[in-house]
Image 1 (tube, helix red, strand yellow):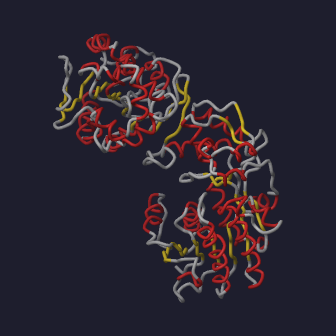
Image 2: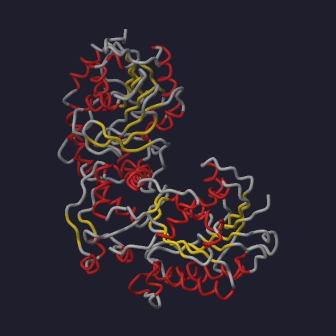
Image 3: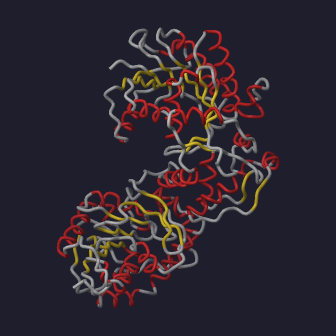
Length: 586
């Protein structure tokens, strides 16, 4: 297939999604990237996009001619420039090289295409200042000022060369992989560091979803009337910033800030106090934008925005899934759910799991990822309330677990690690009819207690400030345990204090839990590592994994999966729980 579209900046956040959208629409696409394009093709494969009609070429828009081959691209009709230097704090020359000089080079290259139908240039919704005079680099910073200068330069050069130009001015584009701008506010909110809201009650930071924006871009060249026009692409129903933050705080189970700081005051405060890049402050405005033309074009092409609250909450889930770009993403489906009086982070199968996997202290549901991949049935994997990504819970662990499993329509095997063995045992004792079996991995109440230091008042500050590597060594966690994520979770507001409190409480429950284990009416099996054996004798079947320590699901995920699967096979799991609620475990 001949390529009819070319996308500059194809490896970027917007560019790669536009490439995917065009390929799905049946276009032949040239993806122009600065490097090899391996990251783009890997991402497209992960999205399940057919790359048959894709050609990847190297390009450098900062040089005349863009470094492209002189032949082979004459059939291109539609040119998209999604390339930009989007960062705060960069040098002026660096920003201008891409956002001004590079953007003009794209116009000049497009002018030489014999079949050119449209050049689509992506600018920004804060471009009104570009119409009032030269850009103010001192006031607005290198990024925004260079985008304003580039907007003016692209329009002027396109008029000179007779290039049919459409300009899209998006607001904050939200979607998986967007960690700049508004995302930093969400990060501070989630971590409990947003002491006050920036700006006043009328600050309007509009958003548009990535999916809608790339569909809009793909439609622009197909609409003859869009040539020579500018479109402000944003959702007018985006809540003002205080309401937006309140919405996300409720979704994530954290407290919203109750105070606000005027922008003028923020500009005068040291950055060490505000933790805000001065360039971002110009986006804190009550301005509104004329979106009528964008809405009309979207309606003409059957494009509709989803409810903005839904989009914002899903974006928050995407941000938290990767801890704002600092850890590997968990596998979909994932997100926050209201459970047990709080907001619980849940991944996996909500209604028909074969397994429910509960993590121990310091860890999160991520600890089960490689084990879950080896299981013979889908798993439901939450983060315990108050730990990992979850917000604090308002009820005892076994009550939280009962509500979590309320929608479950199967009798799963419940698998719990270390500290989580306590609430798992209590739930099994209260509702034996709901479970096929119970697997306790390294049950803390049957092993030597944690050190006195970890049960002392000093535990919380030590846990909160310890480097990830030292934390792992002290707790016997393997180096591939996702220690950076563990440290990030512990630095969330109140997290270390909750861990320390849970350690103290668990120490006092050891005798009670041994009694509950002896009286269990649910089939129970135990899995331990040979380097972390039981300190208490039991009459329960025990599987010992050689060379494993306290977290065998991290160091030996295949062996743990085999042990858990064997338990499920022995107890014949999978049937629906009896509606009468009678004991069906025997």
